[in-house]
Image (cartoon, helix red, strand yellow):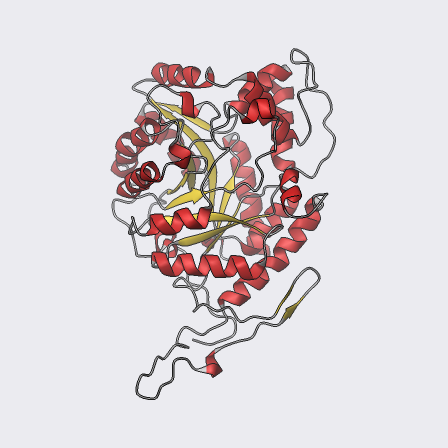
Length: 441
């Protein structure tokens, strides 16, 4: 059996998940909204043979107090499809993955945009299915209240069926373009979806030829009960929140086990925990970099970040007291519970917890390249993951350190490719091209 190899995504919107990243010495303060910088960064990632450049998306700005918002480098960001279409022309191999909301968008829009990106990029698009956990987003779409959590996931499941059905509107050979006969396409190779469901009604067909990959790669990020089931049924890559290796192994076994129960091949889904990586010549140097980075997070930002994760206003809590009981909300359930558990386990005050959340509290690898490679290898070989969605501490140095120092060490061990396997994101991830559900070929 061939040795397992890591799959690596790059979490690039925001360019760093760390609230203080834009203030780090030597960092590009405007990296999140500077196209020449982003083009330079994606080319560096492609040189490092990364699988994908991933853009999370946010549909609200006023989701935190203005005193915190004024300190945030995420307040202005490019719309994902506009940016990724431009970056497609600047790259040849790296995948281009964007978030598309199943709550605040329409299936026809999503299907059309991702199909276009897949054609423009030559088969490198991926759709991160999100239900949108931020309740402030509802206010930007004519709604006063956010849809209930599990209801969002039920809508998302139907949404997936509609979008993939629209991608299958035309057989791969539908567009004959017979100049002599004057026949552009064969109507017998077109399918009208005519979907009528509980949440959605869409006639179709899509006005775009079937995507290069058949379907863009399906990515999912929820870790709640509803999110895990959606991932098992639909996803081909899952971005997870990082915790301990034991937690990673449990989640890995759970999602892959659900796949087996419904007859899906477990190799057709890649589980990629988010990993915050700080490279140093030694552990001590990496820790010093992290401490300096964490010191750049203002408390206004930290408490706002905690409020977003908890789904409730934490600014009223006693900063030097323990975290009070947190009520159920429509925010991300798995993310909230992870932070509540951290506070209890480490006996953190609200101030300490806010500082940790504001400076990133998930899975971190810190130290010299060999140590980071050791840890990544352990996660891969013990079935804690199939790879990682890498989060860089600051740009460009943090990204350059990973590509120039960690990637060669992973390649030396045979844990990561030295050349891309194919032309499409599916080929590089080792995923099959989906059959058209309406046509044999």
